Image: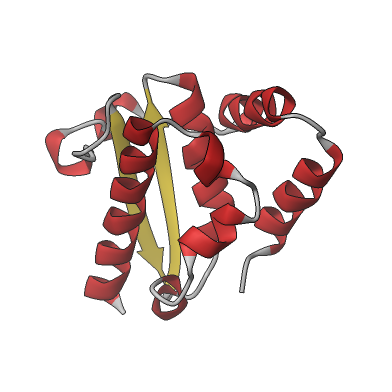
Length: 136
């Protein structure tokens, strides 16, 4: 069910031997992500439950789900980029069917993120699912 963009990240991870290289790759994904307009960084877009500051701004057009995001932490910004690859472009009704935990497990992220980062990642996924469910 994963998008082509997410499958590309999975393939990249298969070539990276150690976690440090994978960690850097996630950070690079975040650096390559378009910047989120500061005007969108408001309380309504802030994700609670994250150790760092995180904002997600979902947009649903013609039944297609997309979101912008940003964080003050580079690794979290990278995780947002990974989630964008997983979810952006899906029909809104399919977003809630994505097993994000299983898909992210393919990257080995669950084994290498701190408890705080894992909780933050779960909070981001919950926000994405909530918005999609409300608009499906």
